[in-house]
Length: 487
Image 1 (cartoon, rainbow, N blue to C red):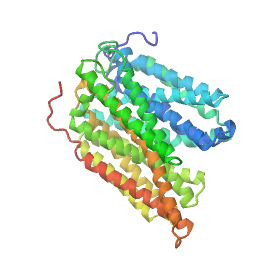
Image 2: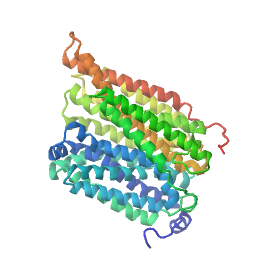
Image 3: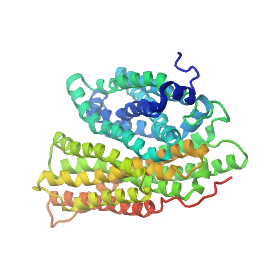
Image 4: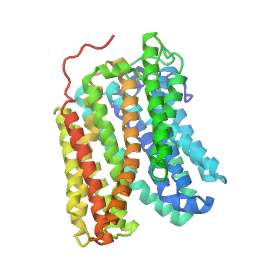
């Protein structure tokens, strides 16, 4: 059987029986793990790459930013690709691109080629990551969706927990190039699983190529320009406020133009990149607000916590990484347990509990300082990861379940885009606020430099606490009222 030979979902279900939906979930879980690896494992090799290519801090940060920008924008293209080429071709094509990106990056002799490989990996990851939520909502019954999301989430969160540690070992043993090649084995495994289990049609039916329309290239250009300008503005804010303001203005203009263009396409009966009818569903709107703030807080804290442990508490990089590992393992255990609860309990309460726990974790950081027992710090971090465990399997279900079936693929890609955009902003925002508060505290004559650093970090954690409390308010509105879908 050829990789792209017609194998609709009903044919595969007849072939593999009732267990087929779990085999399909396993197939996309392996691919999603593969797509997450480049976003975390390569970061530990940035110092080695900077030395090899002779990079300054500004150019080095593009090793991460190129992946993040490409991934964020590509998420909006997933629904069109699924409609035009089908699930198997889209999924396998993205995995193939991920392999190409990894191999090219591992062999690159010029920095420009390395950036190209990171963009290729980002595009592939952005296409792959919205697909599992679509499959879970199409292939599983309502009473199984939480359990499926929990099983999937458990596997996926282990990747960012373990990949940096494995990447660090590979850098020490075989050099920075090995971190690019580590994506190849899981991609090859996932391609084989795709050949067996991923259907050419949607798991819920439908055929590829039907009513896909033309790709909205103008919309893609506008949202790409807006996202790129926004992230560049956050970087520029550190050294040139005028440049940052100009870039922010371009970002606002481009993203406003994007929304107006999407409205125009809907009015004229053409296919937009982002179907704005999604925002007529109140639970989806609330879910997007939660996803944006949750992305900001989660990615921001992923940046802030290791820096705090090193700059504020004086721990080594390896010690800081080891302190984060137990929290990652607790998160992997929490997700499937909460996933089962999501099949019987209101998702808005589960997400609300998660946001409160995340807020509590950041608030507890105000009691941390030099000399404290490290197990207490680890416990504070674990509280936040338990909160994430409540959010991850519940948020997509709460936001996407009320949607018309025809909008689920659009909804999954849109909420993934908003979460990633929030994450990219979160890293930049934490960096800006921390730098600002460090400068303010350094000007205080009556405190020591260490006390100033600790206070600056505490103030940054206060910001994250307030953001999580704001998301908690939105999470309480995730309940699904009676809704008549927009025409």
